[in-house]
Image 1 (tube, rainbow, N blue to C red):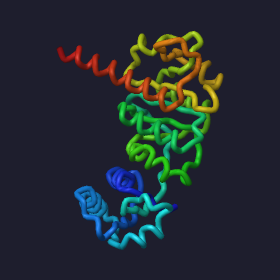
Image 2 (spheres, one colour):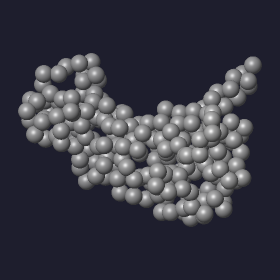
Image 3 (cartoon, helix red, strand yellow):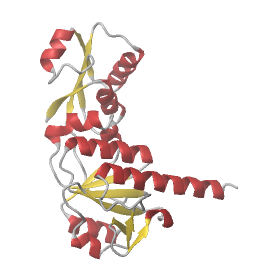
Image 4 (tube, one colour):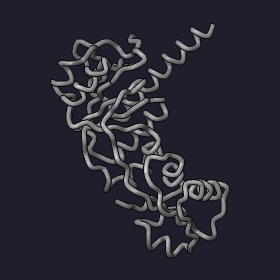
Length: 244
């Protein structure tokens, strides 16, 4: 299925990453910034057709007038089931809103996550929203899909990957845990927590320690940010200690 993606950030992300076929790049003939020249170069390098046209034509093609003078026709993204992920991954169940998924992708990619695992769902209709809200990270972050929680557990068991669940019962503080190089962290979505299937197979439950008495959970993107950057901080310190 072909789709039009809007804006320089989205177009650049798609052209920089060979995850899909890019067919035609449409650019405003009056815009010739350094960023535009770079993206046109990327398109030509990937044998993607470049069409220079006027702003009115772009406005008619796009879903809004916030495209910034650039559109890209490309195939929608296809997702694989996870293979062996060499690093730390995050599994999230219950993500319903494409803007939230975009925020999660942006956060995890910035924190150095090696893979986002999601239960199967068709996100094709919302891809343009996810790309823009993730600042292009949706295209850069390795994303995998599994049929259900049982399929995730089977994958983890087959590859000897420990599962850590963001769940307060019988949990250790995130700040007291040293995660192994390869692991998976399960975080609940906005509308439901983690299933009993996941909790029963957890190697360890983990909770985020707050700075004051607050009995409510963080939203999914915020929880991903706390976990992601704490893992990054710990590994940065480990690398610094090893290099001494």
